[in-house]
Length: 208
Image (cartoon, rainbow, N blue to C red):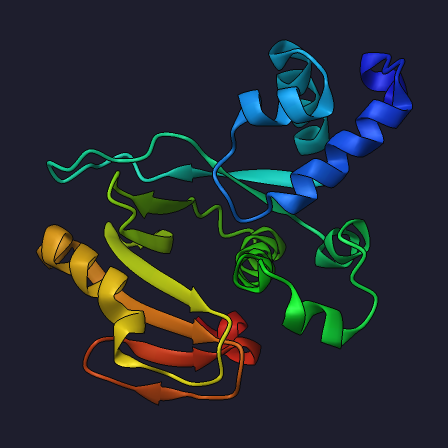
């Protein structure tokens, strides 16, 4: 990889990858990455491109339709390989993950990466997005099905509570007749149909 862009400071590049890992599932902020790594913003942008080209990370773009709301325009950063992600975050056993302050983002990374890889494997050529307005109301994943949208919320919890559906409900009101199916993916084995969405355990995501 270093030969692709002639990286001279491998220590800084390794630090950059670790900083990306700490931001998995979060909005990409090149300024913050560059400042913390001690590199220029153009260098940070170039290194992000190399990590994308090498299929180490991917950027999930925001959904383009704003529904008359001010929306986030920055992409979110994810790793294809959550094993590598865990290694970079020094997570060596399951207990480490349970105590990690960004457990939710890590689980979100896992689910979205699996959805993207299944899409590649089946040659479905689907596009994926997220949606978030400036007030922080968000849908974790959107993908199209016959001109309609499927929307998904991802929760690192085995207990399903009503407030977990608020992002799906809010977006459904905005999109109205443009929604096909709604999903809430959980980290347990809960599979049930509810009026707000279909609840799915993480092991069932390939069936979507």
